[in-house]
Length: 128
Image (tube, rainbow, N blue to C red; front, side):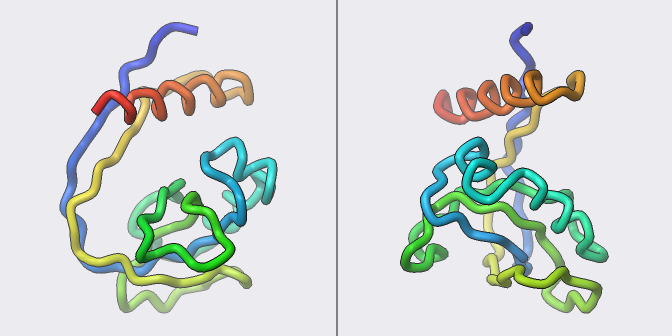
């Protein structure tokens, strides 16, 4: 597969909620899928009125809970969110802050290609 362009942005986001599902041991997307299944993404897409598309996140220590890893997946919503939320999603408050977002250019959708794209995006993060 060709080397993709990875777009990196620093954005300022206001205080908001993150509905998430934590992993116990996973440190990245692939381990998360092995531990909890990749179909969890569909649950996040059921959340009404999200601010953005679902995300994989590496949580800093203040946002981790005992017995969980620092990798989680979730979806961000406004502080006054009142739409539908699927069962068993935990809610935390993310403070207003600057964040780095890594995103690849569009690619052919297949499991094999998706895995390669994720690895390239993760690798670009290590170079910053």
